[in-house]
Amino acid sequence: MNALLAKLKKHCSLGCIKVLLLNPRLLFRLPWFFRELGTYRKMELEKTGKNVFLRYYPMLDDRQTSQSGHSQYFYQDCWAARQVFRERPPWGVDVGSTVLLVGILSQFAKWVSVDIRPIESKLEGLDCQAGSVLSLPFKDNEVPCLTTMCVIEHIGLGRYGDPLNPTGTHDAVAEIARVIKPGGIVVYSVPVGLHETLEFNAHRRFGFAEAASFFRGWEMVDSCMLTPSPAPYRPENLLNYPVGCFCLRKPLA
View 1 (tube, rainbow, N blue to C red):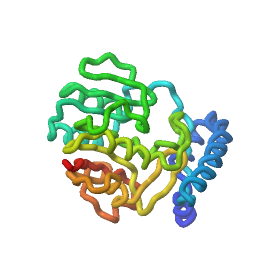
View 2 (cartoon, helix red, strand yellow):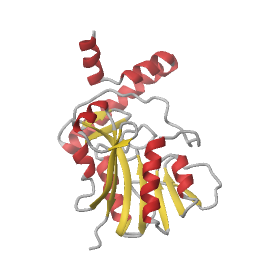
View 3 (cartoon, rainbow, N blue to C red):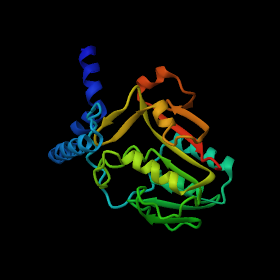
View 4 (cartoon, helix red, strand yellow):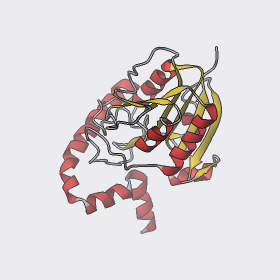
C-alpha cells in the first residue's frame, strides 16, 4: 500500500484528489483541464523541443476576475518583508503576491501592485493596476525593488486565465530584469524540488540551484527554503516539495 501511494504521489497530488472528492462539482471541469493540458504539452514541445516530467496537480477553481484579501502565506510574506525593509527603497512594485504582503509594504513606501486580477482596494500608498508580468508598465532600469512571491511559476499555465505559454516563467524573469534599476533588488519565490517538474495546471517546480540562477550574474543577497518556516537549503528537504525564496541584486554595470 505504501509503495502504491508513493507511486501515485509521484505522478499526482494527493491533496488535489482529496479536494475533488470533497467538491464533486469540480469534476465537471476536468474535461477543460485535460484540453488545456493537451494544448499546453503540444505548445511546450513545439517551443522548447521537449516535454518535462509531468505531475498532475489540477487547480480547477481559480479563474476569477478579482481576488479577496483573505489568503496568506505567513512565513513567505514575513521573509519577503524583511528583505524589503532592510533595503528601504523609496518605492517599489509587486507582481501578484498576496494582498496582505502588498498592503503592508505600501504602508512603509509607495507600492504599485500589478496583477491580471487587480486587487480591489482603496488604501493610501497602494496603487493597484491591471497588468501582466510579461509586459510591465515601467521603463528600463526604473524600479528599485520588485516583489513577486509564488507567482512566476504559474505564468503560462492558464490557471488564472492567462494565455498558455511554455516559456512563461523565463519570459517573466526577462521582463522583471528589464525594469529593475542597477543596484535594485528582486524578491521572489517558487516551488522547488529534486528536478524540474510541470505540475499542470497548478505551477512549475524547479531545482533549487536553477531557481536561484534565474537572474544570471546578479548578486545573491539572501535565500531560504520554507519547510514551512524559513530554513537554510538542505537537499533532503527537497523531498517535501518546499518553496525556495530568493533576494537578488542587479549589478551596477
